Amino acid sequence: MASDSMGSISMSISISISYDGGKTRVQNGQMLSVSETATHPPSLYISQEGEEQQSYYSVAMIDRMASREPGSPLQTFVHYWIVVRSQGPQVAAMVEEVLAPYVRPAPHDSLLHPYEVLLFAATASTTSPPAAFRGSDDHRYVEDFESLVQDEAPLASTRFTEQITSPL
Image (cartoon, rainbow, N blue to C red; front, side, top):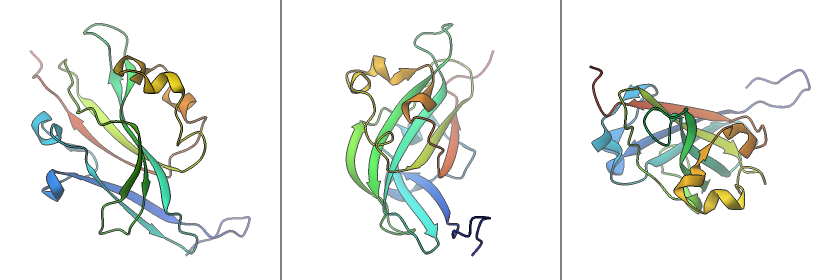
């Protein structure tokens, strides 16, 4: 176990996801079909090593290549934002609170859309998005996702990519 220059013990943490009750285990950077992610929110697995193990986290699933309509400027769309409790690396994390219900990936252009699943420490800024954000899907489009989490750095992340249509 490594320690930093301040003498504190570092912690290794990772997040992995699967769909369809574990049938579709997502590898970081994998290309998925829209149908593989359409039905239910993913199951989340959090692995952590180190003495100071946190059990509550905030998880957001975002698409930084989203747009409101074809041809409009790209923005970040928040597909899912939850507070979870870790139950161990082989057991899916328990959803404690849903801040933004799951909206399935549905790219509507020929771009490759990388969907990021970001794991944050549970802090006030990562467990309570602005009130306007909760109102509608329209408010899930944000110019600067980092401003929502007030510059909190993710502890871990994983991503997958989808493309609904083939380029011409």
